[in-house]
Length: 283
Image 1 (cartoon, rainbow, N blue to C red):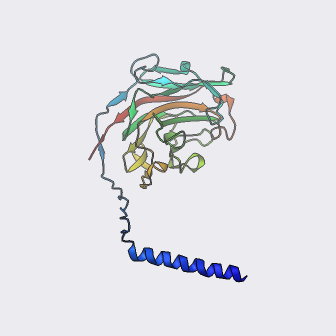
Image 2: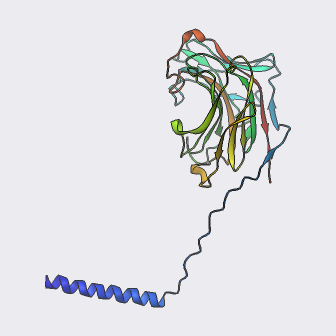
């Protein structure tokens, strides 16, 4: 015990000598801490003429200069029940129609179409506006949404997702605007909704106004939700890169199929009158 005590006293003395010597001779200044810049909403406006517009005025298949397809089955990460094929997208009478059908293809019992502007028509900030009429029926899941072209912050959800419009058939007319990212994703996605009684009989305008400060979702010009950039970087705001648009009608799935699928509703179609992309006017 005496040896331990003596050693302890020596160690304490040595520590005090070292610390006191350093305190007396260390002239290093404390590092300067730069405060995080406060984000400012500059009130960005948008051009009034779209830099990309598809009015779906030429009958036939969707314009290959604007759209390509994501095809196949397998659930698409959402336990969806359809097989996506180009055959279910047709342009006629001034509108694009995407139809979900009860038919077997690729081992799935339903078919539909998922068209994308990936690699063709992209947006980074700006206003994206789609005028559409939605399908009705339990088990249907139409969506108008955006995904990153290059996923520069990693795979989903890290690089973000913007759902301009989503509706599930078992909750008819309750139309959602939602954003997803590394911090908020899946059932924890951030957004709002509006009930539209005429969702399947009339066309309505679904829109996002996207700036460095915020994503704002609108239905028919009414603000539904504002998601603000909190300045914490891509973990909460990865929306500083090119995104492409997706138009699709899913069947079933982890959300859309919660109440099952009513097979009497098919064929079930989403009609799209136009798609417009407007540039943000920088400040």
